[in-house]
Length: 420
Ligand SMILES: Cc1cc2nc3c(=O)[nH]c(=O)nc-3n(C[C@H](O)[C@H](O)[C@H](O)COP(=O)(O)O)c2cc1C
Image 1 (spheres, rainbow, N blue to C red):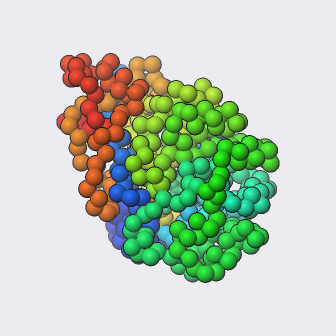
Image 2: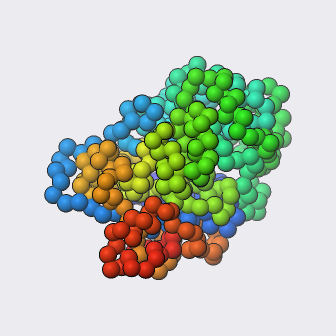
Image 3: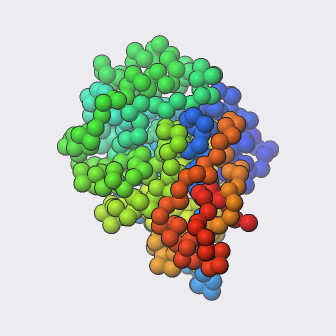
């Protein structure tokens, strides 16, 4: 299916434009938006712009490969598909098309997927992980876990940054409700705690989520989940070293440093800036991933150079799906993988292992005045606030001081600063 065949798309931003044309306005807003003034959503992008690469030359990069592993599974690149609700909003094939397109990459399937756990498993061309929210009804969670286990999902991702849903003004303004043909199919028919009643009433998405989520949830749920399944557990939505350490104590095999793409707590720090704190506490003990604002292969390289094992990509996948269905998702992922390959070649890093926490630190904070957020993936609403007051992560600031020579005599510039 090629919905917009005449339009050339050479990067993720092109797919964003195509998706905007393809989608109804309220669906576009639901996917594109962040909470509040979208400070955090923008901070995610600015964080990448505020980090510079320090390439090494005359390294033989002829044998380059982007391959690596995630929780022991071989993957074609350190790029995974972030869990996102309701892919059928973007294309009728929904998560099935996405999982088919993500060949050789980890796809994380949301609890709020609009295709069944089983259908996605039958179609997937790479390892699958299943994402759980902390639902009030633990019976619903148990049911989802059993279905994921039975169909070969290899890990569970427990999203912990959503005891309640962040408020997105555009959705409230639009009175956004799901179209009748898009439902959280894995939650309907799930018993008394499931979504049957709520979905039948066609509530807005926020109301549906409010009914299902447990705002009284504590760390006890991690212990409980570990007790009912042997699947490796990854906690998603961690932004502090303290919480990462607690997750590892309770047996997490990985953490995803994430602010939910700026859709939860507006004002939370950029995910990339939270990464060094988390790595300093648990970098030796579990796999650490990051998501939020990854739009270019060079962004992946920066995240890995700061110590992430892999990144997850959210909205760009739905942009590809909305613009060109399965082929669009495949293209978006190929573009990002190709860009990563190029960035690795141009920075003297032939392998993923040669990037991660390179002893000569290829990352530097870029000095200079605060700049406008870069256009790729930038906010759609016109909240004017900036994230310039955010503190840069300690490790990055340290590297900046160490490596910036004369320009580094002063303190590091504010987060979000862009180079000359
Ligand atoms: C439309 C949409 C739906 C999402 N649904 C979920 C979800 O069901 N579960 C979850 O853990 N995160 C969800 N997220 C957050 C993503 O997993 C991820 O953290 C975020 O999108 C990454 O940022 P990016 O979009 O800038 O790449 C959603 C994000 C979007 C944009």
